[in-house]
Length: 427
Image (cartoon, rainbow, N blue to C red; front, side, top):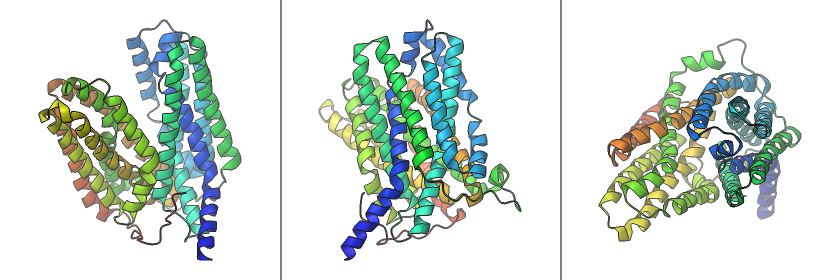
């Protein structure tokens, strides 16, 4: 009887979350289809050179940085569901505009619409996930999963969808045909539009707590919330760590270690595969043992260890380099699997209910800043000395771990992690 009741609870949880998870999967597939194209598409359909295209894309992307400020307020006022769908629809429209690109002006318009849509989506999706996790807990506290598990599952689905889309697109690009390029762009557009439609039609609209009228809310409240601002700053360090593998590994292995050219690809694929398959299980293990802040402290320590191990690789003979790098990337991947769900869940629970949209949209600046800083920082440091990036990022990771440990006492107290109350099912 108990086993049957547990099976019914598992099935109920699956029914509640499948529309949102499916929409995330379709959205991620659209992202993956476009990733291998990136700047290559504009080289194919315009007469612009790579430097000009890169500059136009960078400047246009920078213009969208204020978007999360507005999006957070919209999510607080009207709820995040339609805001998420709007972001996906804008991305779909932007990719349809890609099909009309022929010169600089049309390129800027297409990139602007797509990037605004992406900012809208990423500034609201985490609020939508948090609201669904809270609602699941209110409906059935025994069967509900913690926010960490919701974020872990959506993260796994994003990795799988983006990885699958990128793999398919890479295979199609072997044909080197303009029709193939246009077909992939059209596929991306349709995926985003389908995801938006799914959010509108199948993801339930939940009761939404509006901002309070009797006290400061939104950005006024955020700017006075020093612990939360410190959380954003500390998580910017962790976000910088999490962007460094894809940036550093190919260059460091080939140029810094004189390793084989084929090594970075399988190592990055291993990282993606583990993120797509193991994050939920590791999150369940971690959540039972540590608070989120302590988990992030461990993630920072593992990133510092990753940096130290990467630097030590210069001392190793060529015969053991590849298996050693496998272990090094595993260390990085475990840190990333721990940090992603814990970071988002901590940020969501530390935000006031009536201002959660504003807080979580502003929290996304930690990732935006990291993505802006990381390429330039790595290039500058590596050009000076091949070990310098590992020294600097390792020290930053250690600093982030210490700061998170100190910050835990200033954040709202979370419920003690349950050792037996969380569900065992991976479904």
